[in-house]
Each structure stands twice: as structure tokens, then as C-alpha cells.
Image (cartoon, rainbow over all chains, first blue to last red; front, side, top):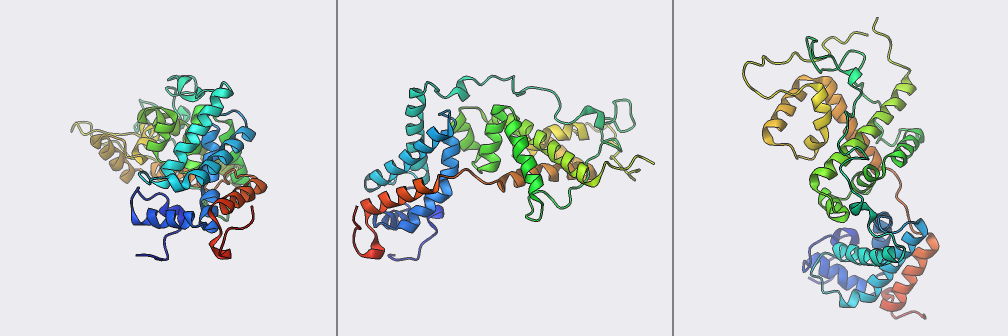
Length: 239
Length: 104
């Protein structure tokens, strides 16, 4: 099975250790396939930078950590035994690099050690204004009021036609989230890590991860709702 | 504006079927999306969604928010750093296209 045209490098790189796809990719990399390497660098550097920032305090440090990681990957490529996926191996190298750099910066995984079940609202009140729901003595208790019910977003914010304004608003709102919520939302929704990866990286339970994701997304949804309402003018009064 | 049927009437509480109201749904939405709810609760959530259009809209908005986040640009390495990495890669592992290792 030589010279199978092969999967894109980023696809092969997540295949488990010992798979044909991984062997083929390793062969290409060891033979100096610059394009395959570039594909990995381009696809993963953003995620690596973000994960590095969990350990080090500045963007510049994170960039150095990521560069050192890729240099280590280049240097150790011939010795990689392929027991895990290439992606897992690269992330492990990153975390080692970032951790040692972070401890030199005396910023040792502030995230997990500082995690408390409050503060950023890991407990906390409702994520939607209670005024938007009917009272308990209403005929339909705790259901949306006429004025409070959510209205469809047209066109939805993920569509390319939506002006940059929506996206700018979303970035701003993301930056304003409490740190733990922001971190979880970035890793899950912006970078597309799985919940298992996020829990492992942050050292939190699946339940805490979901709470932070829930509260973070709820705030961002509310912010987008404001944008859409503003764009359309306040909903007409109940006449 | 008067919505014709803004909210479903709750089922008779007589049969002790678990019921979810809108105000509860909005706090369960993430666990529902994550598939993390116990089955009886998730069943109640699905039953609620079948009857409640506004909550379907809410669910879609949460999904849309996550999807829109996915379209945000990621940080990248500076172009010069990227080029340097590729050059180190080629210096160490050779460039098959050129039929030999380039000068280092």
C-alpha cells in the first residue's frame, strides 16, 4: 500500500497510533514533505497558541512556546514511535514546553488551582432575565411572556452574509466573559476541542465544564440577541 | 404584537410525568445539547420542544451562537516564524521535490 495518494495531513494526524494513515503521513514527513508539514502548522498553530496561553502570560511567550513545540516535533520526528496519534503527541510536547516555561514565569497552571465553584458564576443565578417568563400564579407558569419570547435571527450569525458587525460584537462579548467561562467557550466553540480534551487540559470535571460553557454561551447569545433586536428595532409593543 | 399561542399549556400534573417549563428549559439547554441529561429529563425536554416554538427558537440561537464562534479567526503564528519553521523542517528532513537536502 505504498503511494496511496493519502489523506490530508490534518486528517491522518488524528488517526490512532499504528494506523495505515498515520504510517503514511509519518513517511511523508520524514521524507521532507514540506507541504504536509505546513498543513499541520497552519491547522494547529492557532489551537496551540490558545492552549499555551493557559500556561504563560503573554502572547509573545505563547508564540515562543509554539515555535519551540514545532522545533521539537521536527527534531524528534524520526524517533516518534507512533503509539498515539500525531496530534496527541504534538499536544503533549506543547504542554511540556508550556508548563516548564510557565513555571519559569511563575504562572503555574493558575487555571485549575484557582478554580472555585463560584466567582465566575459556576453556581449562579438564571442565564435569562426572569422578567421574560410568566409568574408562578400565571395560567402558564414559567413560560415565555409575549414580550419576552425569543425571535428568530435572520439571517443567522454563522452565515457568511452576516456583516462583520455581528462577528465583531461576538468577539467583544467573548473577551468580556469571566476568564473561566471565556476559556471554556474558546476551547470548545472557537477552537473546536472536545469536552474530554477541555476537561483534561483544564483539570476540571465534565459537570463544571458544562456549567461554564452554559453560562458563557448564554451571555453571548444574549449579546447577539441585543444586536439583532437593535438591527430590527425593538419589537413592536403589544398592541 | 400578540403571539397566537405563546406558550403551551402545561400537561395535567396528575400523571406524574416530568414536565419542563420554558424557564427551566433555558437552563437545561447546554446539557441537552451535550447529551448529558438523564434520559427521563431529556425526554421531558424533547417533549417540551415539540410543543414550544419559542424554546425551539432559543435552542437554535444557542446553536447559532456556537456556530458563529466557530467562524471567528484563530490566532496565527507570525508569517516570518512560520517560514522559519518550514525552513528548519526542510533543512532537517530534506526536500524531496529538489531531490536532495537544500543548503542549510
